[in-house]
Image (tube, rainbow, N blue to C red; front, top):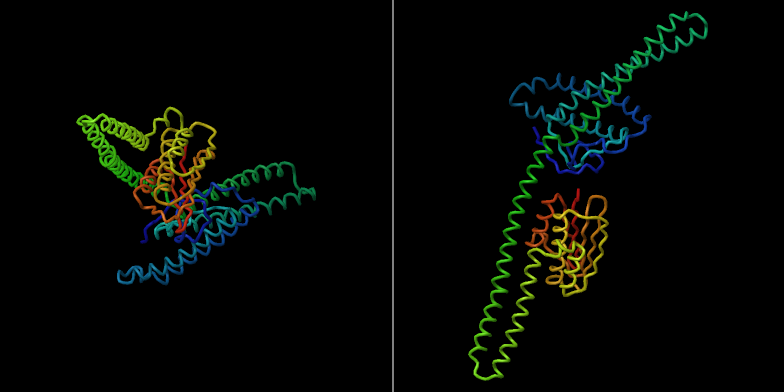
Length: 407
């Protein structure tokens, strides 16, 4: 048996079942097709159900002995599944054309799923044909009643009996058609997309992966802070102490004043670097002034021009604001340090329940999405069920886009 494989994206047209993209299984999220088209799809479903039943009867008779013998079972099952998958493809196309269903493309249903679907589909399709036959017979009988009524050969008691009996049968027929149509749609979604169990298992895997990535990102951030403190601030403190010591031991007043001036400048640079490190750890302006002002601070500290567009009409969740800030801060820092860019544009926009952050620079491109900084941003956005995309061809420009759900 083949296993199920899937990624989640239910926005695509249905490809052949067993091939194509995977995704969520909700095909009912698209607008319903007009009733004449759905009626034609229902009639066609009766024909395909008969084809499926005939296929399994012929395949069972022809390949039954080979399916029972262990040495030939795998080959015979492969032949059966080849035809079964083609029939399933036909059913998927019927659901797409006549009912407007949309199924995931990168999803491969298992052999067991395909066989179970075709078995239920052939049963429900033939049962639907029986119900339609009863409905057709009822229409013929209703026409005969109208004809006898027009000829005046029907008594009123017979007419009332026929109306009562016909109304009950019509209700049962329509209710049966409605139930069978709902069953057809439900089993199609179950076959051509991952089940709730599969989606839950994938969600658990994604959460476990994102949790491990967040732990790695936190450890990398701690190492970076330690490196900044050790290689930057600590070295400046040592230099400041040495300058003060030389000024204290200086014999001439002019030499002492010069050393004190150097020490004062060193202390000022030390404070600026310490402020920069604390901003990279967590900007206090994000809590006190909000995301817009915090992004303004990023633009002020950058060595190249940064143009910022902020189109957010309402408050944002605090984790989303933090993730958006670090996406902008890290992207702008990388552009200033590594891409030889001369300008950076930042756009932050809230559309519905999704905050989109886009940072674009005119540098040389070639950014590595697997690098430490960008992989940390990807982990940070993934922890919020967001998506980070990096488009950085050689020669530029580089565009980093983050989509963060706010719901």
